[in-house]
Image: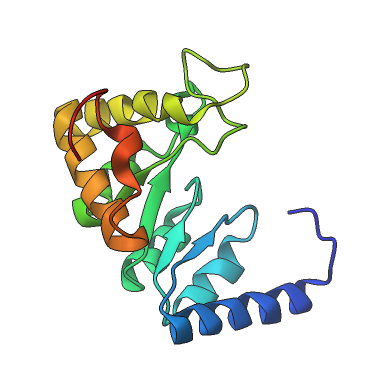
Length: 166
């Protein structure tokens, strides 16, 4: 987005990161911003687990992400009136769905305009539940299971109600 380095150098560095992550068995968290063509092309050959962080890309990256078995992580943007990609949110396979806050930015409604906090992920999960016609509890369970599969067993405690076992 900011183009602090030439695009070819950015592509080479991204390819190297994808290759390294594949070699060591670690996920790659990708924030695709104004680079849909490049991201879609590079995902085709990805051998690493990819998380498309704060997903707001278009159909080209969505289709490439599906083909690469990527995870799609949705942030507070999905609560904004300007959000237009509800079709991609609802088309995301349940086993590839994640929620996030992207703190300190992109606070969900009703916290928009304030510093974003990890606790606000609840609002994102509620919005996902509404969009997909599912219960909040179903979304929490599904996204927690997905997060554990990608990042390990200790990551989903933030979604659990206070005092609940994970």
